[in-house]
Image (tube, rainbow, N blue to C red):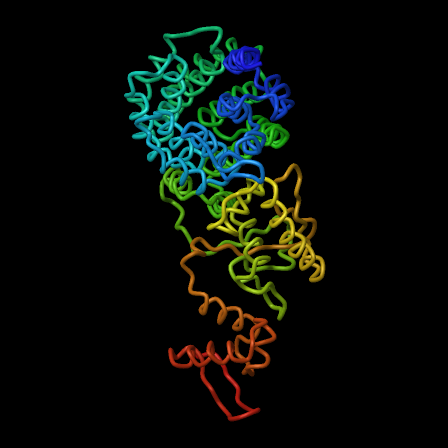
Length: 492
């Protein structure tokens, strides 16, 4: 049985290298746990996450990582490494990186590679480069491992605009062309084209893309999509945002949506914003992206011509309609709002943090419960219960936002006039200051009582008194009257 499973996995490995990932995924996710010898669990998990089925791998490995009713936790370092890589793939980034950093990478050099994947997944390419260099310095790597490491190093160098270093790495990859590694070779040609585009070497970029087209003509839809994407971006950056180019980008965004490649939609929007110097689209990308390095990159590409502001109003419809402050949960101009800091408000804020990529249940769970590990059976249920509460609040308050939960991914979808106030640094905002701001939105100039504040903030009388007395001591509010006639008002 073990020998037949090894032969099966060898076949799957060859198919992946030949860019036949869809076929592999269909066959691998059909495996049953009892069919897989324990010694091959880590390898099956590796195959699964390579073809975008990390949750299947998580379910295989979770019992050996955390134990079950029938067996105690007994994961090997290799199984832990694969599990960490899978967690990163499903969005539980912090937990995955925590597992990987606890492992001895000198004993298993692929830990360096998986850590680099973790950084690349959140656009931290500069942090990935030294890890990839350490991985490639290991003497025992096979040819394919070395090629994967080199390709990811090249991608990181291209992203960081280290053109000369990237060319050296890519040249090494492209001189080792094999039919069995069509996917790696095709990706390297894309990177070479991208590197040339950033240097305005248009003819060179076109040559690389032509070679990629020949190399990937029999590959899956995603590989062909990336080819079309860079062909179109070459036209955009060489000739500007013509009507034909913008039409092609619009079609590409639709295709990216069907492929669930949300980062391409973000990237295409950022390229349009820069090419057209579109301030509105720039701020949508900037505030709708939770990755600081990505924000810094697009600001740099804009040449620093736009001053970064602290807040942005995301307004998907023509009219602003109902407006919610994501940081406070307040409906602006109303006494209604989510209870600040409670789980439904946290979920709303989390869903507003990324306007492009739907968040997996695992990603949301890791943000709601940062101290808890992800359990593929119980964790999604915890998130769904909070989603139900938030969905009920949106409906009760007639906020035209619905929570889409297709395929285990959550996102906010507007269906009417609505807007959301976003802030850059919500984690550093003083909660007391936010509460006062919420009160000021309802009572900007008129006096108010503790009872009225309690109703707005949905806090107890004692909590309101502590908040207002503290604000009074700091000179933020004035107090007048006594007893039942005591009122407060904002300074100025």
